[in-house]
Image (tube, rainbow, N blue to C red):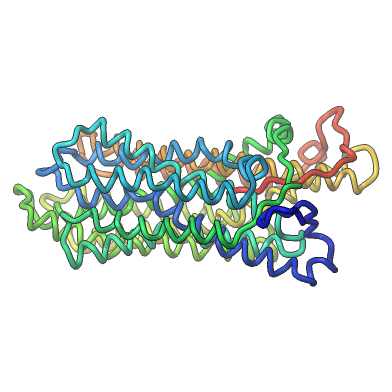
Amino acid sequence: MSSRKHDIDDWDSEDVEAWNNGGAKIARRNLIWSVIAEHVGFSIWSIWSVMVLFMPQNVYHIDAAGKFFLVAIPTLIGSLLRIPYTFATATFGGRNWTIFSALVLLIPTLLTLYFMNQPGTSYTTFMVIAAFAGLGGGNFASSMTNINAFYPQRYKGWALGLNAGGGNIGVPVIQLVGLLVIATAGNRAPHLVCAVYLVFIAIAAVGAALFMDNLTNQRTNAKSMVEVMGHRDSWLIALLYIGTFGSFIGFSFAFGQVLQINFLAGLAKGGAATPAMSAAASLHAAQIAFLGPLLGSLSRPVGGWLSDRIGGGKITLYTFAAMIVSAGWLVGAGVIDDSTPGAPTGGTMIAYVVGFVLLFVLSGIGNGSVYKMIPSIFEAKAHGLEGVWADAAAWSRRMSGALIGVAGAIGALGGVGINLVLRASYQSAAKSATMAFWVFLAFYVLCAVITWFAYVRKPTAKSVEAPAGATAEEEEEETVTTG
């Protein structure tokens, strides 16, 4: 142990005796507060999916297309921040970085609180504020990396799964807070949502300061993140993760607004929307919007569990096949809606909700199954490496951890794409989401075809061999795990 109270110099999670004599308690304490901090980070990352429900067009003068772009901005920034955040805990210490990454969330929260009460604020200013919310998207990477270092291999799946699930649930939780505010104070009190999260941020930062630790012997592996992108499979897996996690985070940010647009159209029935109609549409949307992200978060471990028993490639293929059907369902609902004069019918709204909820559940399953594919791919490649198996296995773990980090960052960019496609769809002549549903359907077909050709049909020797000239390095470094 270090002389500094919260620094640990000699941490070895694989030392069974040390683990049983207090190590497990230390790891569990750090896991608890890592989950809390990451949970708050996810909530702030998705805060604009809630704020747009408090922005009636007749008050803020921002149309549906503009709102989709606002929601896409934090998705983009959060995606880009995942790479530097991956290395932050090893550089600054897990405890220190968790404190900082929690406190920095005060910036987007306070900015949102102030400017949401200034309806005359320019759209450019709202774009800048939304960009700051992207800080919450980076927290996932640093949190997962930190917990990966605390837990031994035999418990990593459970610990990282709990950490990931606890973070993802931050999305539906802030939407539930928004629902509570709209139901009790109406859609003109967005500052109350921000005020609640100022308290949560303080709790996360203080808890991290009091109960978390820095592992001074934690190492980064930036070289592996560059090396892993030389493999074809890395790009394919990143593409598949765009289809799964990108769908989850993109729909999480957009679902409430899609519902609000359709509910408002139904209430206005082709006429001008009144403030009362806008408030009612916001409430109806908030009552349903949280359900999709919640089910998607809960279904993620199911994907991993099924992959353990059936195979990650097969579960991913089945998942994309089901996502094709679900997207086709939305296309059908959209075509009927577009061809029906007047406002959306009750049946169309139910079809939209069913289609989106199915996509949420399936994207969660796919998140788990795609990540389960990664270790299998590099374990197969490791058999083609020269040298002893222990070194090859170490290389496999390093590559797997690096790809998990890269895929997590690239996959989140799918959320940007979903919101931009929806924005373009609502700007089209039809002014509906139907065009976007066609794009989602086509992309899921592409993902299913890639999964079948690359990972489900009988593999060839070429598909699993190591790259020419590759050798297993002797020193085993800590893997980096994000998602």
